[in-house]
Length: 375
Image (cartoon, rainbow, N blue to C red):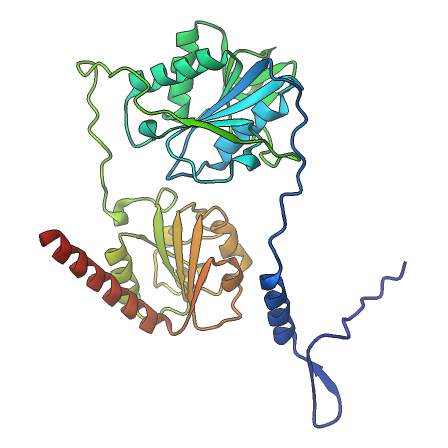
C-alpha cells in the first residue's frame, strides 16, 4: 500500500494571476462543516446488552448534580452492567434529577429520587428510601461511587444497615471478587464479591460497548421517614463569594487571555455573573494575573459547569485544563482560533466591547426581574 499522501481534487480552489491553483483550506473546512450540519444525526449503533429473563438485579446508586452524573457515577453503573450475567438486570438509582441519556449508562431500569439531591442533608430519610428500593428489587450486589460525603457516606450507612460484609475504596473488581487498597495503598486486599461495594474513581471504564434498555420505572417522592431533628439540623448550603472559591471547585469561571486589554472589565464581568476569575498561561506570564489563577496543563484543571474564555486562543495545554467543563463559551476576535472548536457557543468580536455589552445586558435583566418581583 502506498504511503503517498493524497489530496482531494474537489477541494475549493481559486486561480492565481500566475495561473497556479490556490486551494482555500478555510473554505474547505466551512464546506465540510455545512455538509455535516445537514446530515441526520447518527443513530446509536451500540447493540443492546444481551439478556434473558431477569432473575436477579444489580443496583447502582449515585447522586446527580443538576441533572447530570459525573464520570465517577457513570463508572459505577458501568461496573454493575459489566458484571451482570444473562439473567441479571441492572437498575440505576439516581438521587436527584437526571436529564441525560440513560441508555448510555448501560442500565435496564432507571429510578429517580428528586427529593434526595446532594444539596440537602437528610441521611436517615435517604438511607430509608434506598433500603426500600434494595428490598423491592432484592438487589444481589449494590455499587456506589466512593466519594467524600454524599455517595461515600450513604454507602457506608447502607453497609451497616444490611449487616453484611462490604467493600470500600475498591480499586479492582471482576466476577470473582474485589481488591481494596490496604495499608495506605501499599497493598491490595482481595475478598469475594460483597453485597455492597464502594468503587474508587477509575476502577472501570464507563465507555461501554453496549447500550441499556434504560426504562424509566418511576420517580419516587416522599419515600422515607423524616429524620430525627434532635440528632442534627440541616443548615443548608453556605453561599460563598466567587472570589473565595478555589478554581478547582468553582462552578462558573471567567478566564482572560492575551486578547484582554482591560483586566478591570474582566473582573467586573466575573463579579456581575458571580464567577471565579481564571487566566491563560500567557496572561499569567505577562503579570496580569496571579499564578494560582492559571488554568491549563501547567496550571489547574477545572470542571466548571460554565467556562467563559475571553481573548484566549485555545492552545492545547489550555484546552487540556478545561476538558471536564460542561459548557464552554468563547469570546474571541479570531473566528479561526482553536478555542472555537472546543466551545459550545462562540462570540466573534472585540473582547472589550463584548464584555461591556454583557455587563449591560446582565444589569438590565436584573433590573427587569426586580421590577417584576416588586410588582
